[in-house]
Amino acid sequence: MSQPVPLIEVHHLTHVYHAGTPQEVRAVHDVSLTVHRGEFLALVGGNGSGKSTLAKHLNALLLPTEGRVVVDGLDTRDPHALWEIRRKVGMVFQNPDNQIVATVVEEDVAFGPENLGLPPEEIAQRVEEALRTVGMLEHRRREPHLLSGGQKQRVAIAGVLAMRPQCIVLDEATTMLDPEGRREVLRTAHRLREQEGIAVVHITHNMEEAAQADRVVVLHEGRVALEGTPREVFRDVQRLRRLRLDLPEVAELSGCLRQRGIPVEGQPLDPEELAAQLLRWCGVVV
Amino acid sequence: MSDPVVVCEGLTHVYLRGTPFESVALRGVDLVVRRGECLGLVGPTGSGKSTLVQHFNGLLRPTEGRVWVDGVEIRPGTAVVREVRRKVGLLFQYPEHQLFEATVFDDVAFGPRNLGLDPEEVQERVRESLEWVGLDPDRFGPRSPFSLSGGEMRRVAIAGVLAMRPQVLVLDEPTAGLDPEGRREILNRVRDLHRKAALTVVLISHSMDDVARLCQRVVVLHRGQVFLDAPVREAFAQSDRLRSIGLDVPRVTDVLLRLRAAGLPVRCDRLTVEEACEEIVRVLQGNRRWSSSEA
Image 1 (cartoon, rainbow over the protein chains, first blue to last red):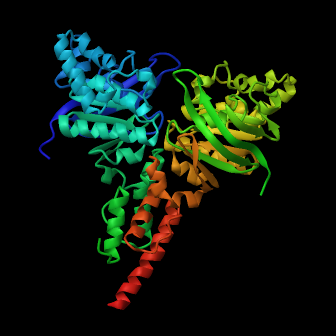
Image 2 (cartoon, chains in turn cyan, brown):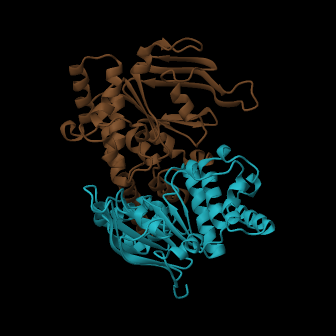
């Protein structure tokens, strides 16, 4: 991989809700973080760790109490930059039923580009491209409420794509989906990264999903507690437990086998990798 | 074998029959829920799980077929005996969205008060129910439900159902959207209710890990029919069938299946990390000795 180029820079971000009232909550505390162009970043943490608050700063849905967030050179505190920032960084939220505004799939995807004031042909072209990329082109004339949860989330992703963003933030966008829906959305997100070079920030507490990212940032009580590749982050079982998180099961099994004297190397994160190592170790040729 | 508490015979349910939107949600389902068991109900979205459990307390009536709850038949076109509805407590997905009272106490007390119980009895039931879900009644009772964490709110919703003293507790995706810690907490509470309070539990879940941890038996629905009905270990050993309808198998089971596919004599009905670890150690060490003595 070539040298990573920063896209979003978060500098010493602090966010306080209800400042100055008895309900005051410091949700994010002095967090610094960079999202690079074209990377797949997983942002994980338990409930109340501040991950959604942090995510909402990435496209100026929330503004810093202290510190600053810079998106592709634009400071989110600058009101004139707001629309440009929201175009560059799109968000998909948790509940598939709350994000779709139109009664026909393609009209929903057209909503953003129409607001940009683009000519109709350009809008039509963007809508078609976006729906094709998320694999929903054949459903373009359907009513959104007849779609599955995973399909609805893909339509929401298409709506973001039609804005030609540089980054897409999935704010627990897989949490309410069944396993098939989760797979659909994740496959789509990985495809965006690979084919379109779009950076993906995936917020989740599903460790199996985080294991598929290039880089994982773990938040705990509003601060960055761990940061690294999935292999680095998932090495420390005890520490993750203290952070209210689980290991991916395969990582846990690897640790367990190592304790029993079977030399599992590195940090296998998926079943195929671990099985292959074990077979090699006992001399079975695969 | 304990006695049946819910029985479905040839249960078929058709939504919007006779309209262009007609859809068959269940076709000819035969199912028995036995008293005191913990049953896992799994299946892809749209397989009919929610439709099925809504027959367990008369929220839906069969289009065809028959349903009995604790010996009382739920017939189409007749009023459901209140008694039946009280016997089966149904907890829907994201039940915390249904909390509405000003305090946790009042929210849990809502059902018992509607039963017309006297205040002391209501008080006792609320305390007992909150204790079952691990929330101290003195500390949490006076608080607003909306000041709680997601996991705590969900436990309040469960307490609201328990306060009706049901015999059967049906939980639809009780851990969805919770972090691993919140998930463990809910699962431990459900396990206690099943083991210590002897409640019959029906757990609807997409998480095979949850089902593996809690249930003895699993029923898999697919396109409105029973696809598989077996003890948990047997069910997960049939991973190819589960995968063919888009379901996951626990990841550790996946590792075992791969070892077996390569010819190692591994048992695949091991569900937890610890069990799988034991099994792999046993087989690998045996295999290694065997291959080195060969050489």
